[in-house]
Structure formats: structure tokens, C-alpha cells
Image (tube, rainbow, N blue to C red; front, side, top):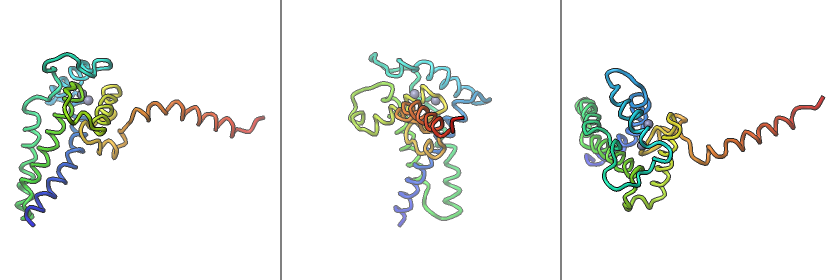
Length: 191
Ligand SMILES: [Zn+2]
Ligand SMILES: [Zn+2]
């Protein structure tokens, strides 16, 4: 029973982290706001500029600069959640603390690992998977259309908030518009 609750807490927090990631990326990393303007500078000014367009993929060997977040970013994000996990456990008596923390750690580790490989291919096993290739394309579009595809790891919040775009979606847009205009022209009675 106890382990079941911890596992459930882990899953719930993993899902929650998709929304948290979306919120931080959209409202902290893409907005210049005191006192978190360093996150904006590091992300929009440095990361987006360095890995824009043709430079999305790093082909040179060695460690690529400014791909991973600052060393304190994820420990800090986990730390701000811990009092809430503790409070929830204390108020309800449900043993969720470690499961919830593990859910956050798994999500943030997945973010850092996959984001690094998206920009810096290393021939790791996960790079063969279709879901990884989908995520890489999803993130490439974020570097092109900055306020779309705000999730890097699990694009669930993008789906819910309507910020998800796929390359197919962008390609089909001009065709859709042409078809719409044609239909409207045909529907208009000629005078
Ligand atoms: Zn990136
Ligand atoms: Zn961004």
C-alpha cells in the first residue's frame, strides 16, 4: 500500500513537471524579469542565439557550451517543491514525499539528458528511438518559433495549452489556406 502511494506520487509529479517546465520556460526563461533576468539572458540571449538555424546541431567534438542549465537550476527547482511535499504528507498522512521527489528528479534528469543529445548527437542508444527524434524535431521548431513547443522533454503541456506545433503542421499551413480561399471563392455568388 505504502509503496503504491509512493509510485502514484512519482507518476503524478512526473506529469506535473511537464506543466512546471512549460511555465518556467515560458514565463521565466523567455521573459526578462527581475530578479530572474539571468535565466532570460542565459536562455534567450545565449542558448537560442548559439543554436539557431543551421547551428541547432553541434557537429564539433567536445563539450558544447550553454546547453545544460546552470548547476543550481534543477536542485533549486526540486528544493522549492520539498516543503510542499512535506506539508502534504504531514496534513494527509499519505507517504508521498520520496515518490514525489523521485518524479521530479526523473523528469529533470530526462530534460537535461535529452536536451543535450538533441543539440549534441553522441550516438547514444536513445537517439535511435522515434520518440527521441520526434522530441528533437519538436525542440528544433522551438528554436525557430520561440514561443511554440515550450516543453523540451514531455510535450503534454504544449498539447494542453495549444502551443504544440509539428513540422507537418507548419508545412501544411499554406496548403490549408489555399484550400480555404478556394472554397470561399467558389461559395461567393458571382454578380
Ligand atoms: Zn535548445
Ligand atoms: Zn526557449
